[in-house]
Image 1 (cartoon, chains in turn orange, purple):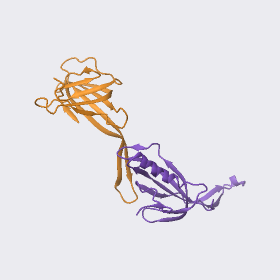
Image 2 (tube, rainbow over the protein chains, first blue to last red; image 1 turned 45 degrees about the vertical axis):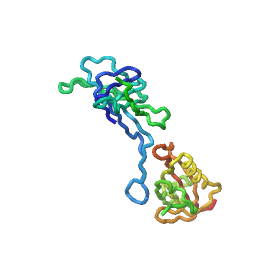
Image 3 (cartoon, each protein chain N blue to C red; image 1 turned 90 degrees about the vertical axis):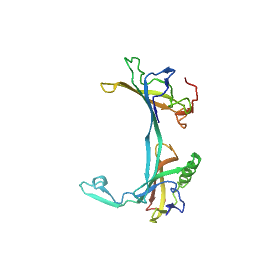
Image 4 (cartoon, chains in turn red, purple; image 1 turned 120 degrees about the vertical axis):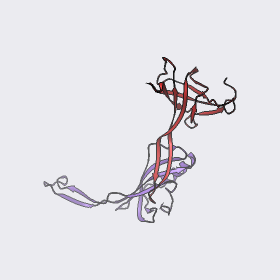
Length: 139
Length: 127
């Protein structure tokens, strides 16, 4: 999932400014691949252990002290910003833990802060990412 | 074709592979037998082992338990030999089911599954 120029991003109740993009990446941290005695091709592939990573790209216009710290946890919320009006606006949320914060400064891109968070499922079975219709709940 | 042990399709829920165990003479040194030489003495052939490695797969937890219980139910004391047949019809008669070991966790992804290794042996002397 990729959200460009989100309307609002919050983490632990605090608003994160100057967010250019939010990406939700998914990867299998444990992969099952099984072959049989019948031939060369895999007959079972499954992903019983997965990691959902939220990557937030900020482009601060000036100094940006007070970056989140690895280990901080809270509810991460992002509202999408469709081109016009509130139709189709979504609220994407999850409980998440900050795992990495990086800064990059260049003449071409300016300053960029990237924050990685790992989404946490409440019970291990349900998808940690919740996507809802946000309607006009954010101005 | 499906594999079987005593006519039961124990492993057909998921991929599984057959392998033969070591086929060799059991050789010991003369010294361990009380002699004083570096010679070795053959004491006879090892018993035949066939190993089945694979994964039991079910759509539900209950279904997986049924598969696991069905396999474990064939571990009996004393062992009772039966015929083991692989996926291509290769047959080993008089095989006793002597060990069933599962991997360190049940995997809960799209399906419920657990890896295993099952050992069958043809005893030279019937227990």
